[in-house]
Image 1: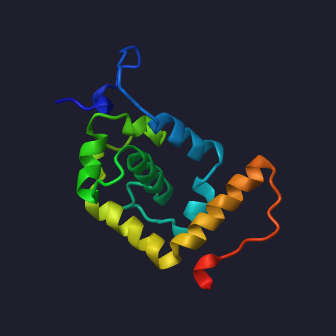
Image 2 (image 1 turned 180 degrees about the vertical axis):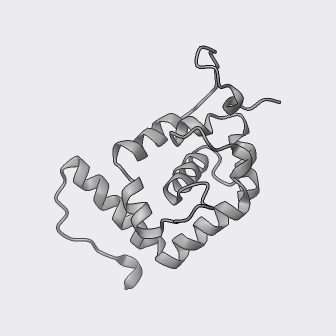
Image 3 (image 1 turned 135 degrees about the horizontal axis):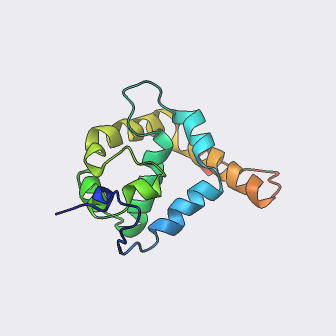
Length: 142
């Protein structure tokens, strides 16, 4: 079975059901969430296939469509979806989105602190929307 990413001809039309994938991915791009994610948990090196921000974007897109799917299901989830379009790259395939890559990103989030990463991303969204945040109550510290 062919993947949507197998179609390289720009003139060939492909139809796919996206659901909210496009809207979620566009939200990540509009609010420039790549910046805080890469600053907090970014990976460097020639061996890196996916940036941490791309993995987070793809996992968020997945969980909003299939909330109780395991990491084992992520590759299959993106098999017939426009993975390359969602992360604006042509040099990756859904096969490269394996559980090792996903696990390392989740480990980096756990080490940094999911709440801290969420707050950094939330601050970026608030800034883009022109909201002035005066107080943040951290209920998990109580």
